[in-house]
Image (cartoon, rainbow, N blue to C red; front, side):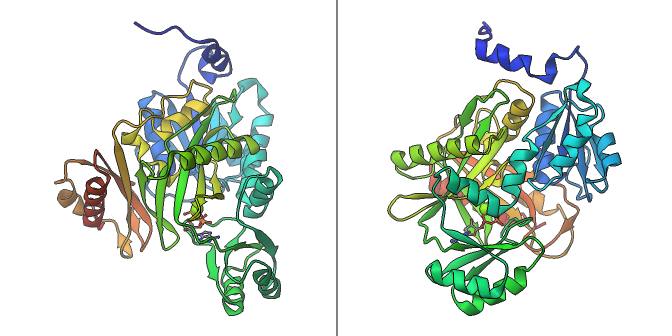
Length: 401
Ligand code: ATP
Ligand code: MG
């Protein structure tokens, strides 16, 4: 028997574009990389049409809905992109959300809106303002200073205890905008290497015991759900693997979850957000950074949870009730498949990898391989974390595309 619709769900549905007089619903997604691809696949499963807009074609969204390529800050292109969409969202925090909102203002009759809103994304896209918001809300994060020159960085390094991570304020991902600074020389060299128009921040080095990630999904009406806490392992500044359960004490998990909820409220985010945390040896927690979109550390949810991070992001931005976030098995491990060379992708390795029937293989359809480029991932579920991890690692290792 179907359960009755609750009051909360009824009011949520009143905000949903699904109410508009029948017909297909279309989601516009800024960005057409692997996160867009997996959002698009979730949309297709839900019977929702999808349109992507990106600056270049990677091949990741080929065969899924419609992909528009061009200068995504061009008002004329944005007007065509939003035309016929019921909601707009993004796979990355640097998308021109403000320009999208301007394009939507001229057509208020459509009720189409952008989630998360540009006001939220703007604060997060700049790691400097992101950290300032965290501090203003009393959310623990590593001490930092904004710096604009080698001299300023050296002075700040002294005040921060002599060991720090230099970070580009905008546009960095997978560690591409970071440089460790454990001496004045490294601080100066890092400033030269990372120098750009956007400024830098110097963050005190955190001698963390492990890194955690908490996925939070928040609806248009403020309903919030969280996923199980994951332990994440970075190699060379890049996500290598995630493991659930996290292995942390229940009190640490509860604290991490509470902090993540606080972060999402602080930035007034709608949709899926990943909050990356450092756990220090004494069990203390510091927010590393906030990703206002589906995240690499949540890929395991596709097979591992009742509702994937991608489906829940779509549900949230569409104003639909949020789906269950619990685990479907005792353990889940995700391992990334990175590029090992420069050239055209070769999927022949797939034949060897699929021999392992316990693993879900995801390849992103990118045509070009580059060393360290994220080309896919694998997820393994089971009862014993060690063996699940081994199977996932072995399979990812075989996938040299
Ligand atoms: P991603 O896109 O992979 O999330 P990013 O480029 O935005 O990464 P960060 O998350 O800031 O970069 O840093 C990448 C990794 O570098 C972290 O996951 C952590 O392993 C390490 N790191 C970052 N900041 C610090 C710090 N203050 N102290 C020690 N290690 C750090
Ligand atoms: Mg990070």
